Amino acid sequence: MERIYRTGFGPGLYYLIEIWWLKLFFPSKRQMATRRPIFMADCALVAAFGAAWIGALVWAALATGQSAWMMVGAGFVLPFLVWNATVGFVLYVHHTHTSVAWYDTKTMWAKAQPFVSTTVHLRFRHGIGAALHHIMEHTAHHVDMSVPLYRLKRAQALLEHALPGRIIIENFSWRWYFHTARRCKLYDFKALCWTDFRGRRTSEQSPVPA
Image (cartoon, rainbow, N blue to C red):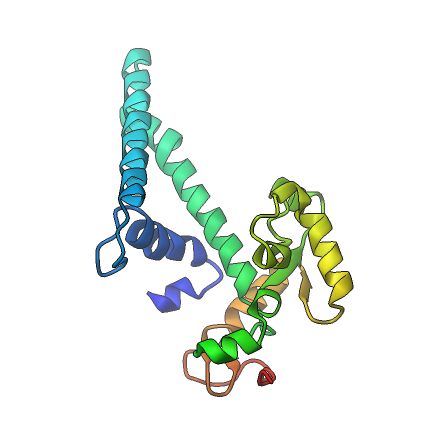
């Protein structure tokens, strides 16, 4: 499954299975040991809304003489899959880059100032960044998650001005995306570099945090 997830076509499937299904929607104790009542109540609310949504689509199909399967597929299943694919893609490109380093100890993680060194500011053309509510100005989001989406662009600009050369900035292209997907399969915490599934280095070694 990891080999599928780490392809350029797999982030949506990864989010659907590993994040949404296993960790967000009535997670087991194995996945989430701490089970707050408010969290489980939220899961119940989501389930109830989903059932109501599907029920309304079935009712509409029967009332108009259409196929209930087609109505549910087009009105619920397809939008849900598109949403998972979109969120999976966004999360993947936020944190996957040959210049992004990961650390297996809290000490090294803290020294590396991860809020500015492990996220990517991915720039899009044609207004796509604005259509995504500027969430691709992701470094600023990690530095202060209370910054509203409509102010992220300004916050990101201030951050990049204050920390020149420290923030990973990438202009999006599908060529870059699939090139990254080919190179960033696994991460070697000892060598501080990305590798393929055979353990062969595919990126430069990241500097050791001082």
